Length: 195
Image (cartoon, rainbow, N blue to C red; front, side):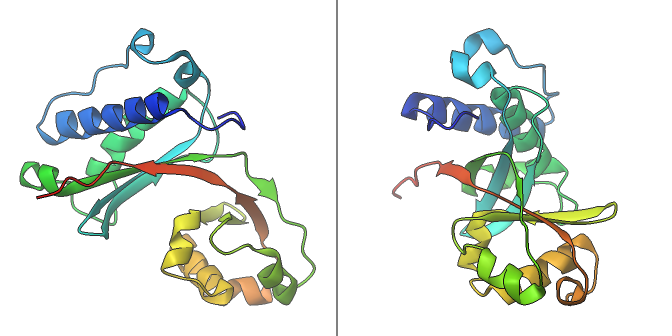
């Protein structure tokens, strides 16, 4: 994604693609390759996204990437299906759940390494509510989008949960110098419909 924000038309297009992808996969139809001629030109550029699904405000699936390897439109198309069907933390979304599924898309900037000297230094370097955080320890890695700060506003608790997500002890960030990267997101979601 370029530094320029997506237009409302581009956002709407990505949300429609995500909804179509989820509906197709949940109703048992194979996901065809995306026809890029049908999307605005900027969405054909390489991009990195996460697609988050919620039901009544509770997480129902979230899948994304941290490096650009395809167009932003294709990234959303594939990650929407994966969030609905292949997030190992949840059973696949059932067809009866489709009306209650709410979609949020996060378009990520390139992760930048954090230079820090100590665990305390790391705590004051992170910007709650602004930074997405990626930690890496050898082959293991985990990330939280900036939206996770809403549920985990304390940086120490945030890092402890992130270590647990990586499959490590919650205190690992306090006793070992991890590779830490931050990134920002442009986040947008479907409008809630009034009942």
